[in-house]
Length: 264
Image 1: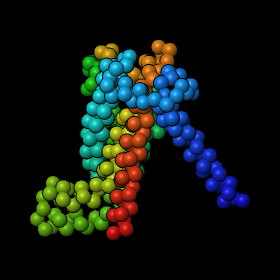
Image 2 (image 1 turned 90 degrees about the vertical axis):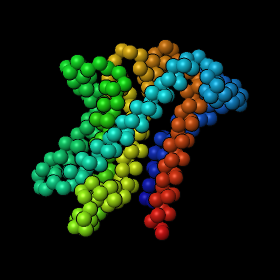
Image 3 (image 1 turned 120 degrees about the horizontal axis):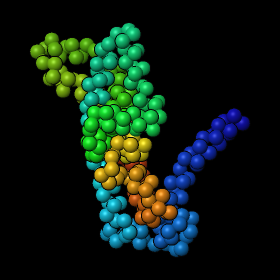
């Protein structure tokens, strides 16, 4: 009975998490503007999405481009900074190491709205013009701790003597970093990059407070503005479906590849 209840509870949680996504995906194949109103099977929303023949098409396309660009740049820089920070934290000893790990966890636990307001006030105090630069800097700020969290376990699993051996054999610190540490830490770096990219795509509060008034929109702020006008653009349903399927495909590929590597 305990096993049955545990499985039922697990399936209930999965149902609550994924049923809304399935609901959106199903109704992306109908032309109805309101979600839940089925007017017959149609691919017109997908056609409108890819041809740009829809209302607010320029705004939506611009928002998607901004979202992907900001997420890519922020994730790449956060992966680099987070990896270096993880190596530095790992080499600390005693209370210093515990303190740095504690400080690294605070941005992840801190509510997004507090982070957004804090960065907004910081940029205003420094007289930094808000726009692409401030949004990217803000995304790097909250993405970097996730990379550190993914890289640290790989450092703990690594044999520390390998790096020392590379230095003893004549490698420079940079060569040892590039040829010894990076290949060992690559799975953690990739996981951190993907998590950072996803967090950046999903962010609203930090972006909203740091984008300024120049009309810069990401997908999350575009949806917020669109909803305040009285409804959502119907083409957002196929867009959300495509984004979900792409992320699902990437995760399946990584998991299958990881399983094959462990098996070999």
